[in-house]
Image 1 (tube, rainbow, N blue to C red):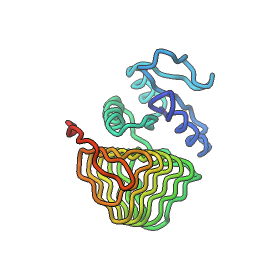
Image 2 (tube, one colour; image 1 turned 90 degrees about the vertical axis):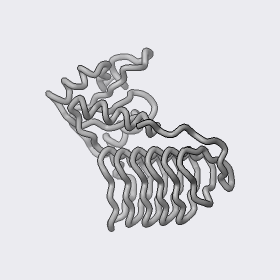
Image 3 (spheres, rainbow, N blue to C red; image 1 turned 135 degrees about the vertical axis):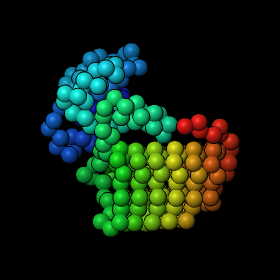
Image 4 (cartoon, rainbow, N blue to C red; image 1 turned 60 degrees about the horizontal axis):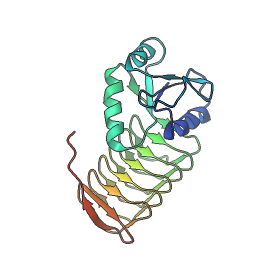
Length: 215
């Protein structure tokens, strides 16, 4: 498997892959950082150009996982590496608790250690559910959504695509959050949130209007 990124969150994705007793070759990709060596942890090769990634997909393993945050960047990297011949793949910690009934996780998601996902939940493409998050029944988490560590999403919530929720935020029941929303760490969301805004506070209020996404 190829993990996109070689710093920060990519190291946590590596841990999840190893939790699943993965024995096959693992490599990383980073064509931006100038302060990294050719090996991560003196063991895992870091590919540094897209041609090397294409060769890896062709000759070794087509699977790639997103080892980066930021919803828009995750979207762009998914397009780039799929076009290079890769197959977007989820990484799901065996130490996450995932409900048995009507819970669906689409391709490319990162479900990290300590997460609790109950029943009748849909987690759409390439969402990132970070450490110790909880998601209540009958909720939908949209494409490329990022939940930072310790986010709590109550039951019957809907979080639209490309939204990012900061650490420790709490979404109360039956809340709808729009597309391309930023929710600050520690916020408590008590009412619906429109598209393209940043909210913060207890209770959360709109602090800034964001540009619409051009994707």
